[in-house]
Figure 1: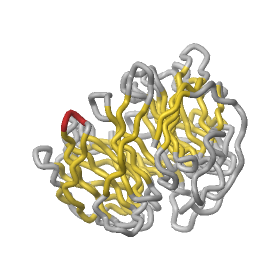
Figure 2 (figure 1 turned 90 degrees about the horizontal axis):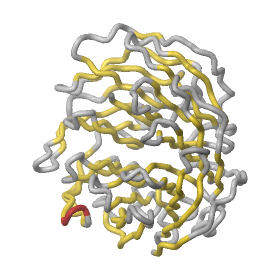
Figure 3 (figure 1 turned 180 degrees about the vertical axis):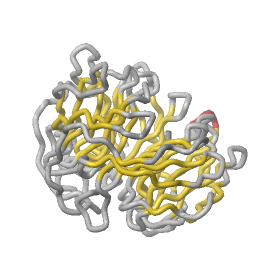
Figure 4 (figure 1 turned 45 degrees about the vertical axis):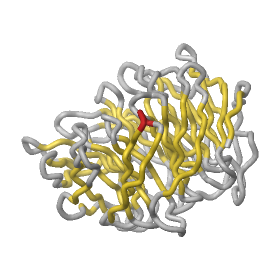
Length: 388
């Protein structure tokens, strides 16, 4: 494992490939405003948005809409925002007035959805990401830039966000051309792009290159300059990075070699330094770890294991520098793809792709115990759950 300084990235398109576990490519979708079919939200309920694949058998017809009870965790379906193809990942603007979705398709796109208190949300428009199969996006803390990762073409993109929440023309596209792909990979596969807690750097996780890239975002022009990169062991397949609240450490889930890694992070330089790989507690078989989430207080972390159909619990110790394995619990579904806390973090949501379900857990923040909150909620090919 190593960490290196690097020059400015190039702005060229990458090659294509085939992404694991996704179905056929859907047709392009219209970007005109479309009202959702939704019921009035019952008092005491909070909104839940659901990502899916629309191009596979049994998939959804757009962004799923639901509500949940933050005390019991019970979910109730309320409708759909149609006209958004393969919205496999969702992110909220800091103002909470606009939702963003990727289109994980051959011609990748990102869509802005204006949120309405009455549940009649409207699509503001779609922009091309310049790559293939975008699978992750995030909003810069300033609220002015949308960052997205194109999995199949191994590139990351930036779009400006207008005051209305609508997206402008792409301002940056950077392809991960070095280092070379890891064992069994035909090219780069950008899987995530996030802003560091200090707001000074943007980090992109690339599964194909076994690398995490650090960029500096020019907040005037919306361009990206690569300043360093950190590699993990060949064939690890890094998928998802989550920061500790201190901003000094981050935790990396490695999809292919079934490990997690604690990384030191320097907010001054943006340099990430990976440590030794650690167990997921799921045994020797590959369990395709998907995502880590960390509690707001920094005391515990939870990992979704798709092959093992479990959640790994870790205690975070020594100020964030150490993960101690506590054990695993069954997720109550098949192939947990995405995890998310409720705003109060008393609930943990897991979107289970192959069982088309969302399971919810009560969290004991003292012990890190997870307790199922009722029966699974049925949701077509659930790959993302975003509770507000």
